[in-house]
Length: 472
Ligand code: ASP
Ligand code: MG
Image 1 (cartoon, helix red, strand yellow):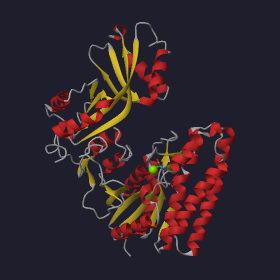
Image 2 (cartoon, helix red, strand yellow):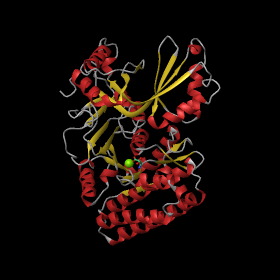
Image 3 (cartoon, protein in one colour):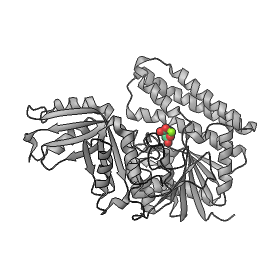
Image 4 (tube, protein in one colour):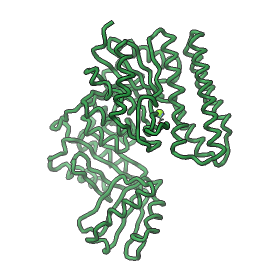
């Protein structure tokens, strides 16, 4: 057989790996795309990553024994393996693989339990097990169905920095590893079945790519093989049709976005839309690799989201709205700050050193206050560390923290150089009597972000959604 003219990298999330029916659907997808080459990237089974994280968080209390968690996870994976793998040889291989993993996991969790000092490095070692379990089951299942498959644990494919739990890939090294290991397999018409999420640091320890990181794994693979297979595409199979114009929890008539540019989608991903991993678009954009988000329960659905490099500027001035409900607003205020160089730097340094992520920043040109938005969970700590600092703890600087606010953002490439968009947004809110507490617009002009009272979040989003006719 000749080598494939095109390759699709399919990422299967936890909602695709549930029971016999869902694994049958994976077969249907493979059949659909098998004229070209296929790569499968799998996430952990639903809830597994969370269970592992929970065990570590609670280890101080010694509430659950390592053996108990491991048994639960082992049983859960074995149950699925038994349900879907019908031939005894592959089932027994899968079972012993699962048992081996369980034994390794128990060893690591016992360390966690005994020491109860959990470094990010140890965390990654633990949470990577979810994908090792799930992907091995997928592999043996496909083998039992007669497919030519190859199993890869991604710590041998993706090299990252050592920013554990949120590691960033070293692209050149990763590309080389993937090219040497995955490309020949594809040329040989075999299907690589690859663990999502996990990777390895240059020092040789397990890392992970951040929550939802299997999306990123899929796009890193596409990035690395596209020079060998020009027609490479990524499909992220999810439990939604694609990206929507707003979160339907707030805007019930939100609509599917059929095409979106990478630039716009990045604004969405970074701003509260949990549909895709925020980093996963970057490798694709660089190499102009197409991406689709499709609904796993409706694989032949005509409606899905395609990501493109072109922006349809004219047609869609505003593309979508995003929201982050639980945020806090920190205001640092004082005449002492006017014209005092280094104030902002100090502020960011203090918060950064305390691992507090700043979501939005705004400073008016009077310079006597800087407003920051942080996660609500970081509110108290932000206040504390600033007040405790030499610089901001001084009497003439006031630090205020405000709860019960939300951040909403209006995103669209068409806003660039189009006057009047902000005016329409503010008018829509004013008509509903919604107070805007702070505003920021980056110079990309593709995103206007606003802080509003939390109780108004739905009404605000709906009003802007209506103003720009996003449901039509
Ligand atoms: N299992 C990981 C998580 O739950 C990665 C993923 O699902 O993509 O975050
Ligand atoms: Mg997941």
